[in-house]
Length: 468
Image (cartoon, rainbow, N blue to C red; front, top):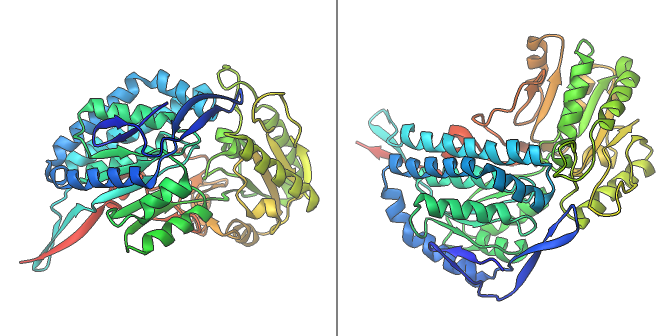
């Protein structure tokens, strides 16, 4: 069984209990991790507080060197880490390597550079100088769907800013977190600067969020859990960053390149088997093109090969757990019950073993249907018709979420014009690539704050005015 990482040492959990980690492709346990306790959190927070002053006083360039070393170690071990992620949560190996491993290595390297170049000493404002200082001890609570990337998106900027960290990774897919902790240790991070306590959210996560010795909590997960984290954090008036759910839309204007829009939109809906908060799970299409787009989407879904995530031809691996598969199946059934038309996929199990769900497409979806409003977190795409562009924008903005989106039009200028009307944190224009230096986060129930780049770094900094 694995241990907790506290004050630079691997040690058993105070609880003496464990959690089985299950391979979602085989449905068999392959590792055990601690079911941590509040006592483990207490020890980790104490270590982080003791290490804070020394780390905050460390020159930013020196902090950056350690992060750069860690980034190189991730790259050097990328094959092993990617296979760990595939076994842990089911992402196909090629995706686990490129998106789940090498992208976070790049994000980590970007914060190594920012630590050296960011102006922490600030700027003059009248007779004052505004400086930026680390927020303190950060509690980072991360999910299972991008088990390394989401950790790096929190831990890297926090460390670059001079904060110390207590990480609570997902107990469902925790093994990438263990690989990352080993890398930070090997990179020379001082004891107590980074600590990791594995366990269940209602026990360890809530203890982190509520602890008076934690100055800031950064959480990624469901909106429901985010509300709970924010409520607990409010009791001690700590800073909160929340990256929560989404119900993002691909909005296709009548003059768009339909073939490109549908191909990219379907891929954006099904990436990571739909287990992505920014997945493009709604496709909003003009009525004149609707039937054509539905047919194209069905053909594109058929190319999303479901299978063993270690097989080279697999595009969709299993969902992370039996619970997650059951949740998605309930939504598919609900879609049919409410009158949506199932045109691809469905509830049939493609294999006897593994938590797989077929890539599923619904046509005839109306605004307000459950599958159009709620985050499913599985490979389910809803296609919704519109008549006027104003109506399309209203539909796109008509959910409680506002995390991501996409707009396709005959010209970039027209696409940007419509994208500016969407109440969402980022919009891809005619297939624009994801930029890991741009701010990532959402409006409305999709969260508070931003991750990545300078914008992510500044979440972990306090502003101080020196009146001269």
